[in-house]
Image (tube, one colour):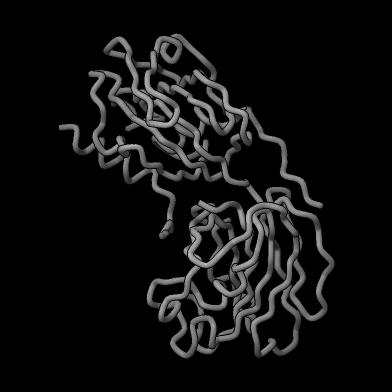
Length: 313
């Protein structure tokens, strides 16, 4: 009977797409869960280098999601709409049983936090925002913030391994003549204006914000936000800002972009970028989707991508 909840937990958490001077806004703690009688009674064991275990009286059920920070880390503050890398174990509050697929055997899972999301993603976000990387947090979810109204509460032990940037935070760079113009909303989402000229015939890359973090190398798994447009029409064909949020990119070429690997021109543009940077790449068809095109991309299209480099896994 526990298989269905376990599958829901697993399916609801994985970061979509993972295959292998501008200042960031202050974290908004309005939706952060507070400590309460349920979360305060959860006892944890296990070194911070491994997923922690929980001990609590059953049945446990709370009408509101509660969180208690057991150990406070010294890393980056966790924000809403941010990708975080976690070690975690999830238990059924009614029985104390460990949900099997939430035990990652020492591995990690990367999650996009969204306090407005239904189910476990929302509950997890309320439990983690405004904590810090390196923390251990225990969360007791309301049924609504777990498996749904009428279900058991979930008890979660979370070690926050890493909090990726919420948006690029590098220093502003001068505009490069002939390249599209980019403006940024307060949350970092770019607005892009393409010149009414013919596109360049070769790959063009320009930094918009220059970060000072780790340098991206071939073979890295990089966490990014990006928006992609078709030069000729100005139509947006893809934007993580409008969809699932930060996603993963394997910085390595596939035989072709349409075969499921990374776009060759984007890989070339990404290598050498630093975490915290935002760059714009104008990619000719030969290094994009070529004569076959793709969903939302007509054949022989030059593409414009604006990419925030948020972290390296």
